[in-house]
Length: 176
Image (cartoon, rainbow, N blue to C red; front, side, top):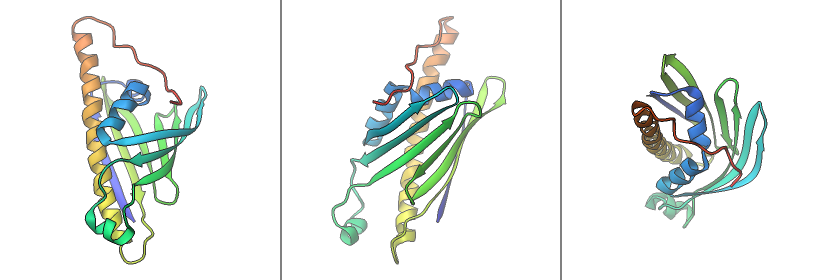
């Protein structure tokens, strides 16, 4: 089991972070940067929560040592995300491999902390721990890219506010 912990801060509100995170254009840009393809299986948006079940296929090279052991594989997983709109918490779980929670909390006026804590398990005899370590490092890199993209979108907001303009419009979550 490999723990994963990420924490960063943004000059925005908790609601704006989630509105950006679920905006279909943000999702598209993030998937392009991470070279991922996402297919939504289930999508339910209620006043209390947003729930999605989706498949992700990574379109990037698998390390040589994994390819030698497991053949020419693509990293594919099915995930379930449940976002609680009241608590600003998203629980994410992939089947028997990883789970974690994203929380966004106000830390001072106009600033929020976005935190992720989770664990990754790879159940492969003899090399599961090594695979988990490499996959965990990859997830941390992906989260760093997500941070950069979020910061770009938030900077766009701050630029608009500094110019006395309204925040750029965002689109609601979509099953596409």
